[in-house]
Amino acid sequence: MRILLVEDDPALGEGIRTALKPEAYTVDWLRDGASALHALSHESFDLAILDLGLPRLDGLQVLRRLRAAANPVPVLVLTARDATSDRIAGLDAGADDYLVKPFDVEELKARLRALLRRSFSRPQPVLEYRGIRLDPVTQQVSYQGREIGLPRKEYLLLHELLAQPGRVLTRDRLGQVLYGWDQEVESNALEVHIHHLRRKFFPELIRTVRGVGYLVEKC
Image 1 (tube, rainbow, N blue to C red):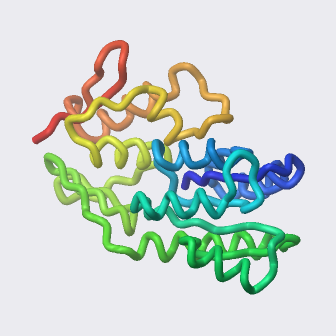
Image 2 (image 1 turned 90 degrees about the horizontal axis):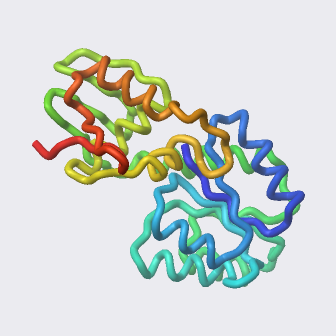
């Protein structure tokens, strides 16, 4: 799962990222509201953790603009503003949950799990492509009726490609989906995942667009 963390306190941001790493989350970390709004508007995240007192653009404004643009990404507000009026303002602006600092890390993890469960319980279309069936809710994948077990990164890569047939996805875009911004990635890691998917399904599944990226053709 890819999470965007928006927190301007360096120690707290590093602490949250370190705490979430063992949970198999890919955590990208930004420190101001304007950058967060741009990232959430142009990239795909499963969830956002958003501070309110941010430089450049307040967290409430980020929330309001996200929801005005019909962006459904689940948002957990994480802030020192603990007055009832602040909680109401955050929820009314579009937050899905609200956690006040200081907080217990285990409670943060539990709230993230609950938000993700609710998110994945919403209706999501099953993706079907030339004998492949991918269910985003259960994350089960089958090919010609036979279940195919995929490691997490192969599943994420296949989902991203099947969700946008006919569209060329750049190497940078796919790398961010799989690894986030800060994780060091071996130069041929993406090609290895592509190779494994072609072998598990069929060689023509993913087409290489030389110098640009990859796509699956429209049926």
